[in-house]
Image 1 (cartoon, rainbow, N blue to C red):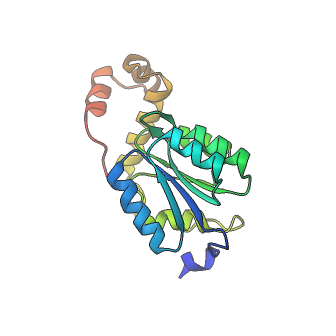
Image 2: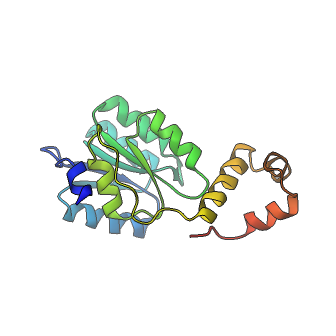
Length: 185
C-alpha cells in the first residue's frame, strides 16, 4: 500500500501531545493514537499545551488552531522552540486554511481540515519529509473548496460582509445567504 511505503516508524520516542477543545473528539483521538503505539498526553487548552510543551516537549503533536483560551499557533511556536525536531500537525476547522498555512510557515509539519480521522493524522505525522503525502481518500468537493475560499476571504476582511462581497465580486445578499448556510461536505 502506498501509505505504508511513505511512512516511517514512530521511533523510540513515542510521545504525542494532543491539544483540542472538543472533548469528545479529543478522547476518541487519544484512544485511537494509543492503539497505534503513541504515548499520549492530551489537553483542551493553549495553557495546558504550553505547560506540557515546556515540561516534556513531545516528539509529535496534533494541535487545533482555534481553542477556547487562544490560538493553537502559540503552542506550535513554543514546541518548535523547545524541540526543533518535533513533527507537528495542525487541525483546522472551517475558514482557517490561511491560518493553517501560517502554521506550516512557523514550523508545523502539515495541516489537516476537520473532521480528520486517526488514520489521516497518523499518516501526516509519520510521512517521510522527502516523500509527498499520499492523496486524501476523501478529498474536498468543489462546493467545499469554494466555501473554504469564501470563508478565508471573509476572515481576511475581518468578517466585513460588504468588503468581502466587493472583493469576491458578488452581491452582498448572496454572500450573506452563503455565510448563513452550513459548510458543504
